[in-house]
Image 1 (tube, rainbow, N blue to C red):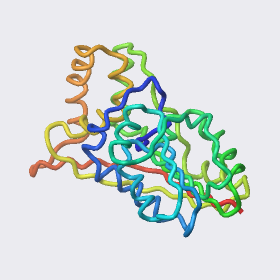
Image 2 (image 1 turned 90 degrees about the vertical axis):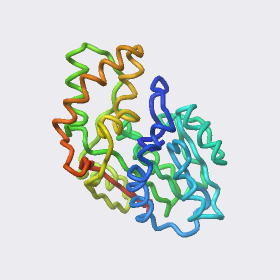
Image 3 (image 1 turned 180 degrees about the vertical axis):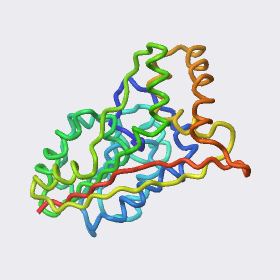
Length: 258
């Protein structure tokens, strides 16, 4: 799961399209991983492993740990297995950590789980002392890239299964601290340099537009993209050198059980 697993099973995912911006999408994972202090965890869970390209980093950092890779998408699980990752399908809503779980990392997953704020305290309560829960979610749902999609969906009266709401950093801090955990919460806005024709449309095509694609037939989805493209170009104008600068806010939290 990167803009990953824990996604509704009715949403289809294209691992190749997702990885088209792999370097940009990996940056928050690296930043999240760097804030995890655990040295010798017994079990590390990648809760939403997606195509498995980042799961390999967990095995490299903790070679003696059992790496548990989970995703709700069959397509993503297949892609992860093709990389040699022992991935399995799982729904985060019903997932519970094994007793020896010392690290849980969930990168760009929980925005697809409306009830994730109810799940987080339960996960921490099930983890042993010293275990760490690290999560990252997009914080850009008020950005033009998402607002314009919602406006066009409303204009066309399309019924889609959308992303759940995410909280602001202070709310995550209060929620996690209330469990007694040691908490570190922060946010970062990345300014991604995108190139090519309609790069923002291509970016959201592998994530935010997946529910729209599932709701429409092929001609309808093509028409939707054609109408959305000029709106996105106006909101994110290209520069003379062909660059389109795309701000992307992310929210991070690491909680250590004590």
